[in-house]
Image (cartoon, rainbow, N blue to C red; front, side, top):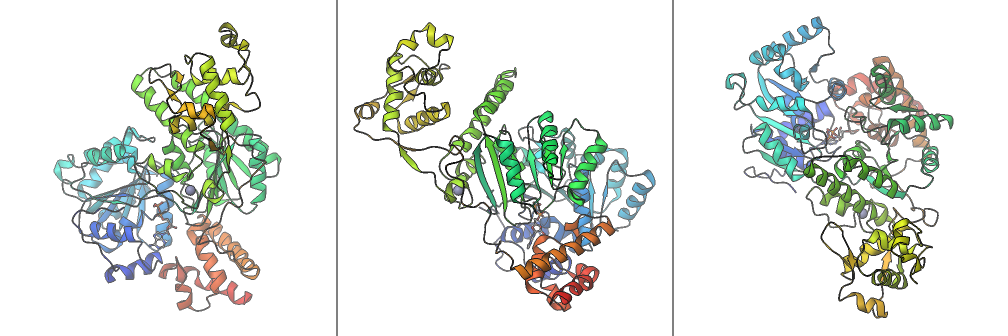
Length: 619
Ligand code: ADP
Ligand code: ZN
């Protein structure tokens, strides 16, 4: 999935890179796409990286930044994101800082002076700062090695996360008296449809960029869809069944967020709300406590998330249906950034869909309206598929997934096919009896015995087919209809009325010569009958033994103590992956400690003694 038009593929990590990679970041080697992207960055080309969350995008510019002369200026949409990156980098012993509107004047001035003295390898800036007088002054004199544009999709109006202030980045190339006409740029994003990707290249004026596309698949994420029945109870239970895990629950409205958080707290779960209606202070506190403190669950509207980079989010639950797959992908993408398994569970209901359609109907721009309907349709297809979820999910981003991903509910536990020949005959008969002049909604109403005005007015309550399908849900019938349409045994007119009518291939079904097999989607099926075998398991999740688990817990306590003392999130000290390796390998010498993934020189110096003490005690 990688295309890099002029660069040859580098098979082995460059020895010049391997040293600093281990020394600072604690990694033994670059991942294949990073390897190629870094080579292009070092060669001074413009680079465009599309890689899923957790793929390791930041290293593509951070590693070159510590190796090279000059400062890499990183544009990042949110303060919290910048803060997080800078904390992590300083934890590695890298010279990095940030400039944004929250800094006191004197502090900002100090950092600017230091930047001009070449004191930073990486300087993070908010986009609006670029064009501010202070930003202009700074950039005019700074030795800029390159610009890195993080979350680059924010520049496109076709993306789901458009940020007007990102437009200012587009002026870098032409502005500043042409000073940055040839300064290399690297743009990075996790989500871009082909259209958005094209927009990014155009707006940033990337010159013949080397594009590295890592695909979208996140194999450590488990995708599951459940019908929305007693969902709050299901969610509470899920959280209680995973007492050591932290996660996010997304709801569509502020009121629901507040209610949900309250309810969870009532059950003794440390949960806090997050939405744009809360005071900025409260929002900040809640987010902070999720990252640094004891809050285990954040219940949020989609306003939450852009700003967090917490790597150990173990579950993301969509309590309501999302409006588009880009948002869904981005939100679920916040789970499992550390590469360890995480669950993504979506609760689907036709009522949610109707609610969203109501909002879409309020739109006045026809093009926008159609776009919104198309987007919603794709979410429904994704929820209803009885095959691998990766096919519709990544199909939306223009990627052909072969299916059988092994990390979605349908792959782990394929839905059973059932014989629906009789029901198909009922459906087709109802279409014939109503004269092939109505849409599916009406036909299904008749089948289910509706006494609605429309049904009575047409005399359809008098038909023999009226009520013969009352034992099945609307969802069941519309899914069966979808199956017949896919098979060509039923068709809809293409005009706005979408009238259902028979085809040549309907006859054998009515006669009973063709049998209809179909699997009910999980978005419709009753939950009780078949619950998924297991959710999280994956290659990098061999469970710890009991003894190792004890050591892991002790190391975790130590991590928390040190993090609190330094006022950084626990993962800035060490990620879970590193702690698990320590618990398993029990390093007691510097050399052994350096072998732990994520341990470089700085971490060894800062924390080696304390952690090895705990390990020695346990041995
Ligand atoms: P992204 O920005 O693409 O979401 P990050 O840059 O946050 O991804 O990296 C995700 C995780 O992968 C981090 O925990 C990081 O330490 C780890 N990581 C990145 N590159 C490597 C590598 N070459 N080897 C091992 N771990 C890596
Ligand atoms: Zn699958």
